[in-house]
Length: 149
Length: 117
Image (cartoon, rainbow over all chains, first blue to last red; front, top):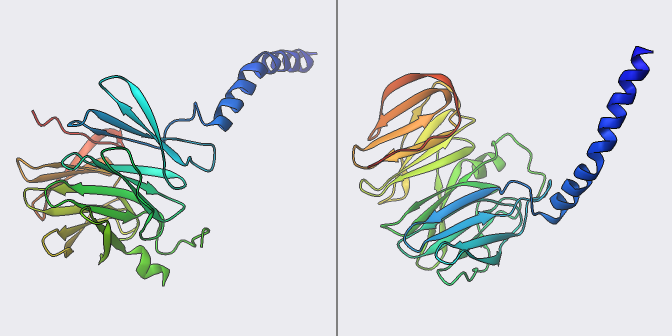
């Protein structure tokens, strides 16, 4: 008796949550509500860069937000943009495409470069704004098998 | 092959997007900090529990500093030439290229930021 009552409560709760869950899944698939994978700011140009999150796979775009008018520009990058480095001196942003093993340079006009091949699975980035050099670190352990190659 | 590939940092020259590889000692980078004044690049490495310091003038490994545990995040104070690395429960402080201080943290911290003003 107790068990069945408990089951009823659980089932009712589950059913009540279903519409919400369904909407969330739709949003997840469309890539709109998952937490972004990375963010970076250019305080000189007043831009914010946000890498789209997408369930399991990561996204293939970043959003460039113009702080002055809150306008958003979508820029196509590689797969699974996981980190963004900004050179506020040149106005360029560097997007690390984790599963592509490439970096996309996005210039001050929000134009993406062709993919720049780097090491396996890049995930850490540091920018020297004085020398205009961008340092990209390997995120996978040497002992790890690389499933993408 | 993979081992050597993993233990390197790629430098992109912003002027023409050309690249070069910098062999490092550490394994599995998680965060990179740059001091533009000294032109040193600090790469926090998780598997080797270390920080690789790259000389940006030559883009070669200058030294590697062993930490006691796995680094999570890095922050650079150019004014004091100090580098702060959190390993969760410990804050490691590097001055220039020397590990100076190890501070126990009261909780588990996975991110770090500096107030420079």
